[in-house]
Image 1: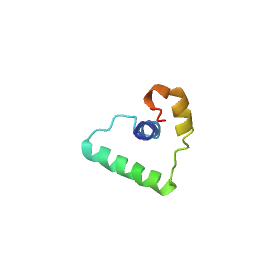
Image 2: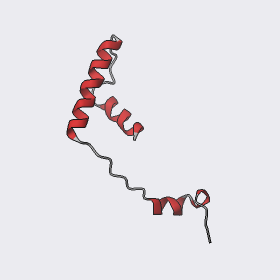
Image 3: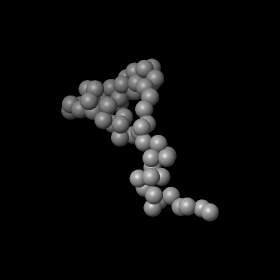
Image 4: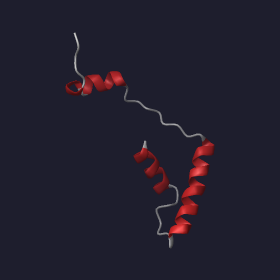
Length: 63
């Protein structure tokens, strides 16, 4: 989830050089408020069942 949000913040205007830390904090806070207001959600498509198939060695089998 963190990587997705970092990609979004980079693509929505914080990818350019920002002259100071205070301006960076203000821009990041404004962006964060907008994202929270939009109530953005992640559509997870890799389910636990899929993980158990693809990464079988990580999921122990109990009998």
